[in-house]
Image 1 (cartoon, rainbow, N blue to C red):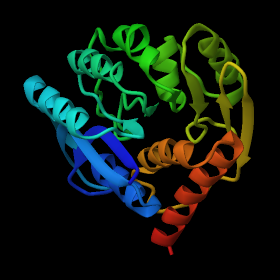
Image 2 (cartoon, rainbow, N blue to C red; image 1 turned 180 degrees about the horizontal axis):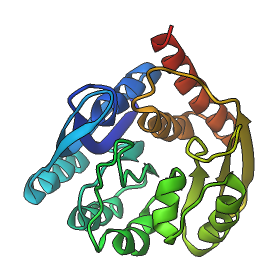
Image 3 (cartoon, rainbow, N blue to C red; image 1 turned 180 degrees about the vertical axis):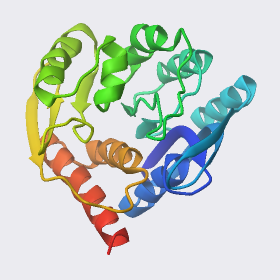
Length: 245
């Protein structure tokens, strides 16, 4: 049995967060484990409320799971405050799991999740303990204190970011203004660039969660990063096309 652990928030609509991540795990035949960081009230259009779990409860969840299971891969989604970032980084030091961090810093409906110390702690502590960071243009801009509208500008800074920090980056392209979606995987020894036509999906809630979870799982299944990226995109494409028929 392969174990997939999601550390993220609960989504009442079932389209993102913990609920979406566990759908991906089930599809690939992984046993889904979960640590809930927050309870959210949302639908397919908007996040209305976010309530963080107690820090002691968060630690109890992680400590017990790590005591009982040995996760093969971990996907991290919404971490609603900097104290949680610090705690999660501490426990990640105790595992050899492949870790994907999808830095949910602000919802598409405008709900802001970041406190004043968040970015500095994420960069100084958490990034040392993850395998791949998967930011969109807005999230990568917050990490670099810049605003990115075009893919090419962000790509250059992403290459510099990887040189500075231990983790690889998958730069997601859906929020750039370019007509075609352009994305890139960048590590210290590998560079893969991808391009796609924009999808005109009516329903697209949770695409980032689905992709980052698929990326974590496929990194365990496949050794070739090209295959990992291709299969992760295929999953998202097939899942949302089926919903948008």
